[in-house]
Each structure stands twice: as structure tokens, then as C-alpha cells.
Length: 91
Image 1 (cartoon, rainbow, N blue to C red):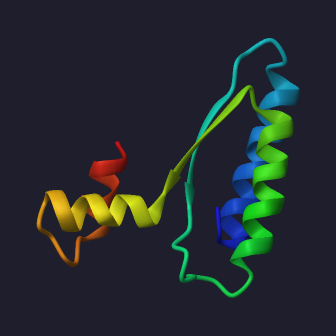
Image 2 (image 1 turned 90 degrees about the horizontal axis):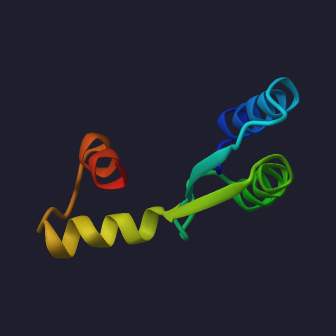
Image 3 (image 1 turned 90 degrees about the vertical axis):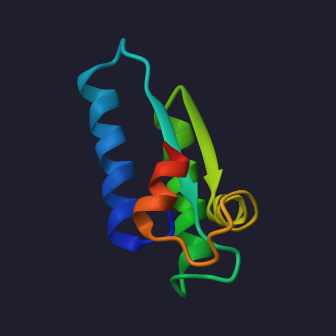
């Protein structure tokens, strides 16, 4: 949700899906950025994207990068997990 292109495109796709499939249920799983920051404008991107997703979705499930990293470090004893490992935990 923090990246400009990815968050904007994702929110736009959800809006288009809502328009094309009005009667369908839309459930979003969104990953909140690290609290220390990945992108300088991440707070703005997150708020704008989240606002759009809430308007165009039936539900939004938010996952937090910091919590996912904690799971990797404490439960899996993996101090520097790869994106593959992080995505596996999310899935």
C-alpha cells in the first residue's frame, strides 16, 4: 500500500472491478508498510489507497509488514527473510 504505482494501480483496478461487477463481493488483502518507512511518501499513499479500497470493497484485511517480520525473526529464527519467505508467511 505504500508504493505510488502499485497502490494507485491496485486501487484503480478495484474501482474498475466494482464498476464492472456491481453485484460481486470484493475482499482485499493489503500489506501495510514497515513503520520505519520504505517510501518517503508512504503515509500519504497508504491513506489514499486505504480510503479508496474501503469505498470500493466489501472488506479490507490489513496485514502489517512489521508483524510479519517479527514472526520470521521470533518463530522461524530467520533474521533476514527473503521476499519469498515473507510472502509465504502472508499466504
